[in-house]
Length: 87
Image (cartoon, rainbow, N blue to C red; front, top):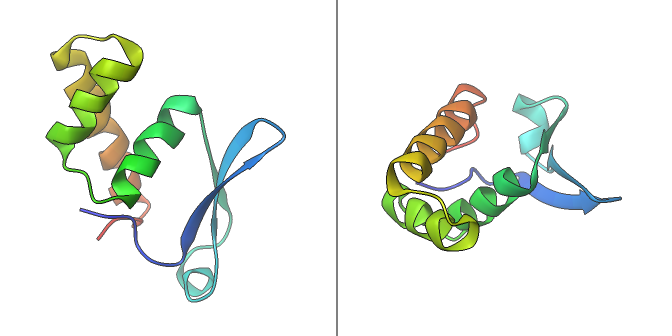
């Protein structure tokens, strides 16, 4: 699972923003604002991490239980799927 081509994450004045570029602008109009955790998970998806790997990294970074991390990862991925940002 990976982020579709044509979408990039940028930090602007302390906020994390996902915007469409190139071909992505034909299918997505607007931008998505992410919090720090969302940006952390986005970067893991860009590298091709699995849900399990993302949860493991979340546990290390944020000191959360595995079930909490897995639930958060699944919710985040579900939101990206709804926005059609994942392949």
